[in-house]
Image (tube, rainbow, N blue to C red):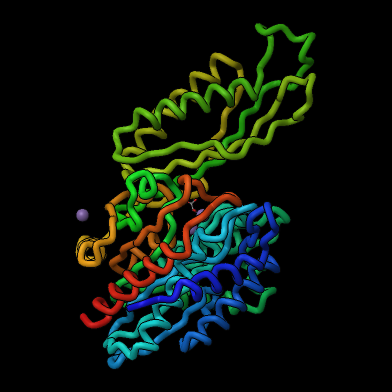
Length: 412
Ligand code: HGY
Ligand code: MN
Ligand code: MN
Ligand code: MN
């Protein structure tokens, strides 16, 4: 199954226009004006590829290529098109455009397939706007319900529910988005690695074995705002110094974690009053833990809690931690891992099996379908930045392997 690099390039370059600024990457936050334009583009591209287009109550977009036995459960592929702020042009887009091009190629070749093939653009994979990610796939898995949609709010205080309603989505039918085991026969997501392993090992593709799960937390540290000169070191209750100590404790606990892969990140810190000559009285920060073992995350959190209590005592501060979400890691179905690996071997494509440190919509799709993921190399291993890059040739090659694997699954 040949896929023209120019088609992949066209789709990715077209999509990057929506929210893209030269040198500043792409900022296409979910349901922003740029995202709405990107969504409209994806629907048009799906139609141009010969797919039947539909959308559900939370904005997941489906492009279907009907099979000869449409009563059978379909095979899905796809990813997301929303980005982080100043993000790249491939995170999510490679798998969405790749899915459309794979189905286009299958349709144009008239390759027979029993099961319907569906390209999905999942809504809001990035947590950038509402604090939790994978909004569309989370709703499909039944983990995001109406109550949650009303509770999660953007920076302006508008809920996901109101955002959807104002855009004309029938959000009260959110439960119709839900999928149950058996509704989808299999799902394969193509995505950039967002790390250095494939490039470092000279591989052009990666077969994902497991998807690390994110656990997100808000933490507030209350100390005593006071004069930076008049308050001796012995008298101060410095909320930022306490935060810095917690940060080092977190880093140590994650490095020592008994897990195949774990990361810990404090990505956002709000210091009050954030002034040169004032001891910070209050700090809010976020914790992002990724782990292939939920048990290990539990151990990290238990140890962190004990250390926070020690820091409270020693520094005279109060620490409060709130769970935003704690998702579960997902194993990629062994049969599909082997299917993807077998296609790479047969075509002489250098590949390796690897863990995904990033989470993906497949993590939630795994709640109702066997999943697998195909990774593409990230240049210099960077992502979530304007420098994010994957060659169009690699995207097209990945889409060819994807098309072959989809056809095998669609004829099972
Ligand atoms: O943060 C992640 O893992 C994903 O890119 N949203
Ligand atoms: Mn991302
Ligand atoms: Mn992504
Ligand atoms: Mn296995």
